Image (cartoon, rainbow, N blue to C red; front, side):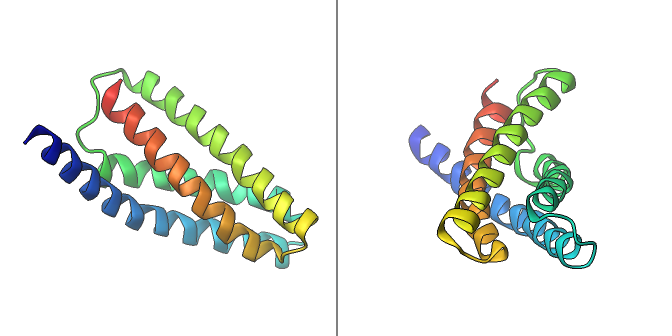
Length: 134
C-alpha cells in the first residue's frame, strides 16, 4: 500500500514536471535561437544564458505546481540546493551541447534537444529528492 502511494506520487510529479519542463525548454530553446541567430552570440554563451533564465522559470513552476509538498528546510537552504542542481545541469547541458555539436557535427539546435532530454531527467530526480527528502 505504501509502495503504491509512493509510485502514484512519483508518477503524478513526473507528469506535472514534464509540463513545467516543456515550458522551460521552450523558453530555453527560443532564447538560444534568438541570441545566437539574431544577436550573433556564440552558441555556448547563448546556451548558458538561456539555460539560466529558463532554470529560474522552471524553479518557480516546480515549487508552485510539482513539488508543492516540500521539506521543511529553510528557503535559503532550498535555494542553495536548487542552485547546486542548476549548476550541475548547466555543466551537463553545455558539455553535451559542445560534444554533440563540435565533435559529432550535429547542428547546435538539434544538439540542444538531446542535451535538454538528458538534463530533464537529471533535474527531475535531483529536485524530487532534494525538495521532498531534505
